[in-house]
Length: 437
Image (cartoon, rainbow, N blue to C red):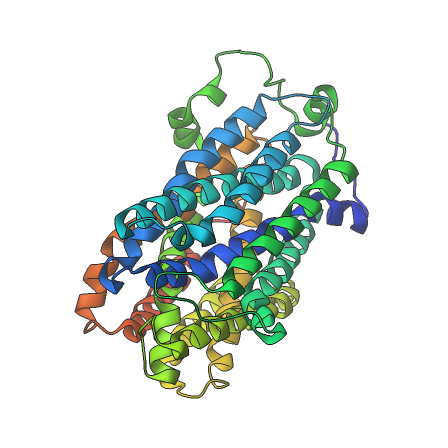
């Protein structure tokens, strides 16, 4: 097997640049879905159920995309066709979803239309997102993989900053931040429009700048037989792949379970939590609630900027496991502080701490897992299956959201304590990971 060549900074950058646009779309979704559905009329106790669809689509779509792209060879590349198709679908859906309340439909039909659009949006985002992780696994050597995922983490967080601040920015420009009952404000609608335009431009850039290896080159650098032919090997059987997976695959997955459950509850309840803590309201019809929604987007952006800074610190830790664990503890502390920060600007402190955990969650798991998978082959299928450790905990957490909300006194701000506890448990599980060859 030939050694993969070192890539220049700009080649590593180009491999992941489209991720900037994909992450804008993902940031708009994660920051505004609860706000949109609460504005459309959803009850807080059933709010987490709306969050079942995104991870459910991820757990179905990403292994399929990974497996299919392992077997795909075209003149446009191996992974790139999937990210381009996914991005194109996402652009269309981003123009439809925020207009769900403006179509003159009855409430039940509005909710159904919104759910359908959310399902399509997350399906397409997952289809566009996964190939970027696979491109790094395919084309970057082990020594540069940490750097490559750090660049991806930077672009991810930069895209998040842009997506998160859009509603606040458009309100500052003068677009209306209030709307008739059941209608999404213009600040949110135009955020989705502009995000869709940036997404497709970034993906076009990557498709023009990145040239994937042909089958012969890929085989030489990765030491596996061509998977474009039907050889009846384990690549066609996910159960065999999972059975053969290294222990690091499963142990990192255990950490992922608690991390992603924690963030699912943040995305679901943090707008209400900030609105209750700072503005003392959780009524979507109250103008203060929409102000809180915009400010939460700013806080998400601050979290992302904190992630960018912390991502530069992670490589300075003695080991990646220590960096991973410390980052999660800091994030858990941040969650626990949210209900104790009644000032609008005080909320910046917990979100900076949460950003530390987010940076580690983006960089550490894929570095640990792809290093463990080196030489296994079927990288796309394995990474698609590994996405289950992101999606499954969110599905379980979404199903249990109403129960946890009842246990913490039907007070949305207290769900941040649940998120904090989950991250601390995840930090303890990090030390079970065996990252040695």
